Each structure stands twice: as C-alpha cells, then as structure tokens.
Image (cartoon, rainbow, N blue to C red; front, side, top):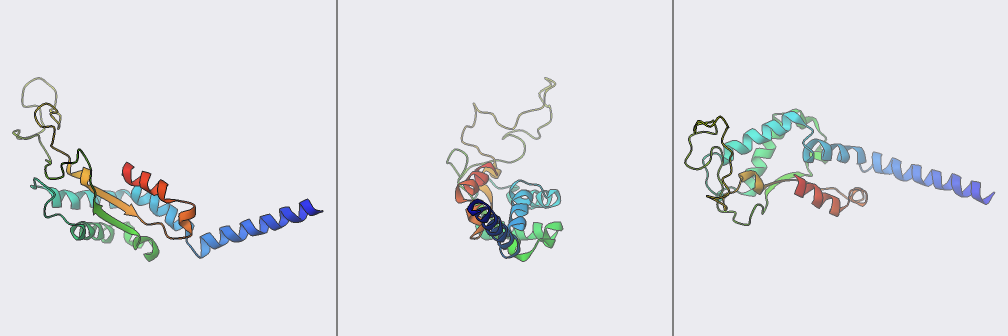
Length: 175
C-alpha cells in the first residue's frame, strides 16, 4: 500500500540523515562538548580553567591588559593539563574563550577577593557572620571579573540546524 511504502521510505531517509549527522558531522561529539564545556561537566577542565583565570585576574583592578589571546592561552593550558586534551580535534577547534561585555556596563572596574578595605572574607567584625563580597551601598559600579569571561563553542553546519544560534546565545548568557 501507499501508506506502508511512504512509512518505509520515511524511516530509511530518517535513518540515513541520523547516520550522516553522526558519522560525517559528529553530532554526538558536539553535543558532548556542549555538556562538558558550556555546562561545566568536565570537572578537571573547569577547575584548571578557573585556576588559570584566577591567576590572570588576581591583583588587577580592570580588564585592561586582558585580551582574547590571553584568554585563549589560559583555555589552551586548561585543555592541555586535563582530560579535555583527549577530545577530538574537530571538537577542540570549536572551543574559545573571549572577553564579554557584562555586569552593569562599566567594564573598567571590578574587584576580586575580599571587599575593598577588608583583609579577608572572614568574620572580622565580631557579629558571627562572614562578610559578603558585595556591598551594594558603598560601591555599585564594582563587578566580579568573571562577568567578563565567556566560553563559546561554535556549532558547525549542518549540526547547527539541531543546536541553532538562538540556543547557543542562551548557553553563552547562562555561562
């Protein structure tokens, strides 16, 4: 019957499309990369990246002097020093770190560590509570340096038909 022939043909076409996406375009590898990198599922990579970024941001009072190539070096170091180095080249070539506009729009000021004027985040005022890192009343323009870092993963065509640019923009905002 016509219905049976159409169903069989449709199943064969869908199977061919899925086989092509997997074997020729590495769909599963790209989805795994999104999970491991953008969703921070690769714990050793995330730890190494945070340590490298912390070393880069430590002691700075602005993002001046931190460029995309500096972040690329930190990212490359995190990949080389972790199990992420075993990811296929077609995955790693799509990963990049960049400076992103973030926070309240004043990218020239941020602080890291204890609040300005404090030696530590420990309870040094005797009230039994640890200090909070942001004092909204005294310094509204200070930002966390992590607001300026974006980890991106470029989805190649035709896989971008499944994970489209709108989704990738949302993933970048979440990161």
